Length: 361
Image (cartoon, rainbow, N blue to C red; front, side, top):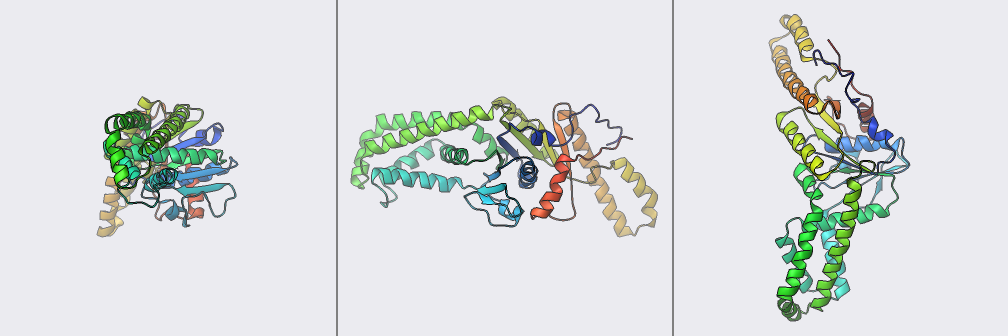
């Protein structure tokens, strides 16, 4: 940017994350379509150079890790080709919820029965009464699974901003769930008993106690996890955006919400930047000097590119105005090819730790 002096700002790279050996959880989030998955993969690759075991987990229902690495990645940790210490996995909240419900049915002797059996009725009532409880419970199952795995650091490729913010409210959701179960137990215990008996649903009291126990267990896991999330030595959140109004606005909202929840965030990755090392005025001077010698179609193409570059520079400037004093703002270049496959991800990941030199005019 013109007349831009970055000497007093935090280093515009993610080296601070790589160098912080105490970190166990790194969340990567932002608006949909801004390059969260690519950033997560690149960050995982860089962490794998200094950590013994790194895991990348996709919590976005629209999984993209398989596409990014060009290999099949499933629900279990899958080693990434070319690495001995990097794995990835894609989780599905609906599958987790179904497995948990199935285990409860097996424990109460109602497995294999009709869809309207006691457990199914109770779970349906719970999920309809408390939106997000299914995600909260499946997230707790995920965290228990991840904690049991032996990884130095876990990078979460999260769903778009709204889903990510709801993740932070899970402890509150579970408090409501426990209250709802107690209310159901007190007010509708007889009704559930009759329904269970009618459909051969086993012992309703046992079902309720099991659900209550599972919720208590879930709440304990999530409360423990949230304590870790609020510890900046263990957890940080990387915000990803592109230099456009809606994305910058969404990033501001995300930063404010993270601050409200007490979760550390001091890195912003700006993807799809046109010539990050160049200034729009410098490019425009070149275009003005050479425009006459260009065919008309080339002039139109360059004109549109310049309009986009000016717009990007404006929002990048706003980003530095908002966050430059406290955040490491990393500018990632727009390339003329897709970043897919381990080799391209490795090459692109270097931009996270070797910052673009912003020229000072």
